[in-house]
Length: 523
Image (cartoon, rainbow, N blue to C red; front, side, top):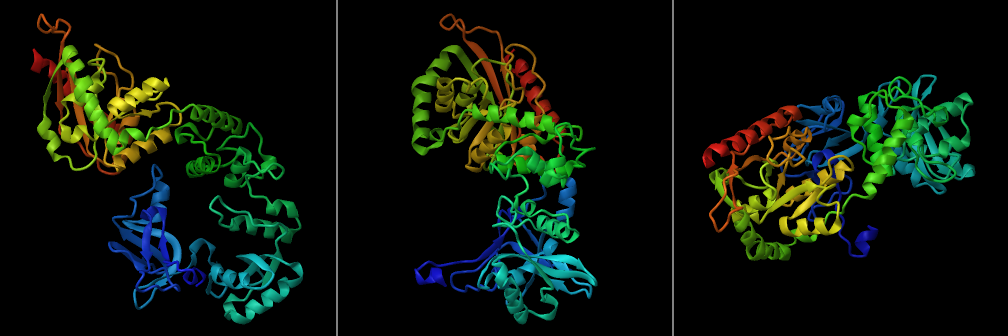
C-alpha cells in the first residue's frame, strides 16, 4: 500500500533458481497479494499428498550438476520438489504456507507453519524479529519462539499473539535472543538449525550467549569470514575443535554432497572457486586453505574479459579489418580450401566448433576466412589465457581480430566457463581447440577431458572441424604458400547425462577422421 501511494505498481511472484527462475506471478490487471499469483504459461503446478508444491515445465532444470543423489532427492521424474508447502485455491491462485523443512509437526499430527506465527510476532510493539521453531516437550514437538525484543515486553507480545492464533499455533515457550540479530545465511535467511542448537544447549545449561549470536563462519573479533568457520558450519564440528590436520572424511565426516556444499559456501562467501575434483575425503583443512590461497593468487592475475569486441559497431570494424588487412595477408601465406559447408546449414542458433590445433600456425585466422559470412560474423575463439592473454597487447589484438577471449586451463576455470556460457547465450558461436597445446606438424594430441564437459553442458550442437596442411609449395610467385583443407563435419549433439569421457572420445574421433582424410583430398 505504501508503494501504491507513491505511484509504484507492485507485483508479487514466486520462483526458484531451478525454475529459471519464474513459477507464478500476479498480473497488473488482477493482483492478489494474499497469494503469489497463478502459474506462468507453460508451467504446471501440483500439490503432493503431504502438501508440497511441485513444479514441471520446460523452464525446470533437469537436475544438479554432477550431484545424482541430490537430483534424485529433489526431482520426481520431471517434477521438481520445491520444498515449499502450499495450496492452489479454486481460482487457480497459488498460496505459500512455508518451508517443508521448517514445518512443525505436533504430537496430534497437526502441522504448524512458523511463518504464520512469525508475521504476527513481528507486528508486536518492541519485537524486532522472531524465529519460530519446534522444540521437544513433554508430549512431543512444541512451538517455541526466539525473539529479538525488549525482554520486559516479550511475555506480553507472546500473550497478545496467542490470542489471535488457533489452538495448535499457540506459542508454548519463548527465549529472548542474546544478540542483535539471528545467525543468517548469505541470503539473509535465519539459520534455524543454529537457533535450535543454541536453544537445545541453553536448555541443557551448555550454551554461552556469545556463541548464539555469531554467524558460524565469521570471526567475532574481525568480522572476516574464514575457512574454519565455514567448515564448522557445514560439518557441525565446533570451530574450536577443528585442527589443521583434520581430514574432510574421517575427521569431519563430510560425504561428497557435504564437500560440494562446503565448496559452494567458499565460492559464495569468499569469492574463491575450487574444483570439486581437488577436494577428496582425505584432504586436510590445511590443504584446503592452501588451495584457496593458490586460487586467490591465480584469480588476481586472470585477464579481464573485454566487452567491446562483441558490440555491434566493432563487429563492422572487425569485418573491415578482415577484408582490408587480414585476408590479403593470408592469401600470401596459405591457399585454404573448404569442404562440408552444407553441414552448417542445419545449425539454428549458437554452436561449438571443435578444431584440431596441429596443422598450421594461424589456424584460427584461416578458419575465420573460410567460414561463410553468416556464421563468421558471430564467431568467437576461446584462447589460452596463459599464452594469448599473457600479455595485454597480444590479448587485445586477439580480441580485436578474432573476437577471442581467455579460457583458463588451470586456474579460475569457472570465470572462463561462465563467460563462454554468456557468449553462447548471446548468440555467439565459440571455437575451441580441445588439444590445448599447439604442436605444429606432429600428430593430433589427446583431447583434454574438459572437452566433454563443454560439449554436454552447453546443450548446443558441436561441429567437428578438421584442418590439414600439406608441405606442397605454391607457385614460383608464392614459394612459401601452403595448401590447407578445412573440413566442416556434421554437427553432433549430446543427450543430457552423457558422460564427459564418452563425449570427449566422440568429438576427438570425429575431428581426427576429418584431419586425416584431408591428406587424401590434397594429395
